[in-house]
Length: 428
Image 1 (cartoon, helix red, strand yellow):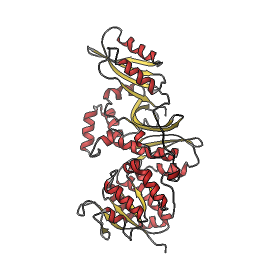
Image 2 (cartoon, rainbow, N blue to C red; image 1 turned 120 degrees about the vertical axis):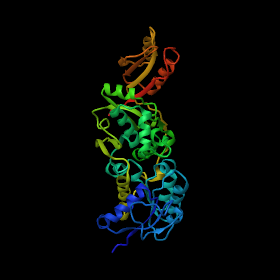
Image 3 (spheres, rainbow, N blue to C red; image 1 turned 60 degrees about the vertical axis):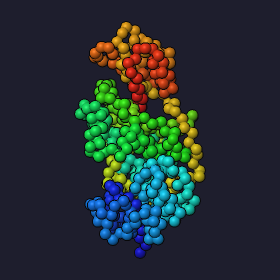
Image 4 (tube, rainbow, N blue to C red; image 1 turned 90 degrees about the vertical axis):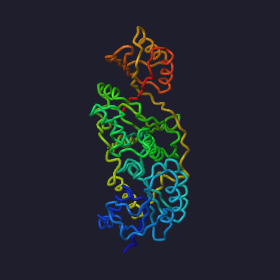
């Protein structure tokens, strides 16, 4: 019989316990599909005594994940602790140095250190797999590295943070303001310990930077990501977008342009009838576009014990089968530096502003837009109380540079009450 693949798992939270549960529930099925048994030999976590809803009997325990990563009876090290540095990075480095393959769900670590870790692993003929780091149970990494390997990828797009999608759809369905839904999500345990990782777009930005590296053969460059969270989205934006046939999503988009790699994670309006527009609650969706395949849409649970553990096990089984892939789909040493570029592809924009309620105010705004070469597609003024008048403008296609210049000029007109809100309308 083929020798079993022996696992060491560091991190026994929701995902780690989920991996243990899958292996205990389906050992024969997994062995058949992998071509060899897969078993856990040792584990590590912060607490030995915590009730995780699954038995850890029979597994060796290591308090130090670095020691776990270097045990002689561990063939494959699974890092599920999280954190961009600290024990997670140290233990992965130790595993690679000790001759182990690595599976991780740690998007922050890979977004910041993926290049150096991939080069270290590949120099020793080891692999790092990270399906669980992006979009939970959706097999998007495998889709890009394997299923679409014959395509030139033209665009990667998606909703990759379930918490933000929950907040935005809950605001719309319940008619509640952002602060109230944020507090609700926090009470339900949906937010990270640092909520900015979710609502500030950082978590989703980490994921997009990894997909962009695979899609375009570039070194991961999270630092060049254009990030904007959902904190400024109001219930008025939600309602007015719906009134025009749109919904607001925290949308990630990566595409290669003549000026470089465009990566942005920001609120966008999408058609309510589109697949992205119909996405509800904490579900994730990734849209991939290739020159041969056209557009494909992947939808599923973006987090949770079962879906994320399922993604971990997909990588484990591939390694057990002997499948060896470069971390980012091609040798790490062949990846090109990613020259970051601001959004250069033109698009229509939604503008919401409050104008001082006096004659000629709206004309001054229209003149500023005209001077910037921006034409108005639609304009609405909603009911108001003096001294300000809420105004909504949808532009024809324009560039972000032109729009930024126009907004800066609006501030000098003396007719604005507060800063305008500008949201890109994405064609999907």
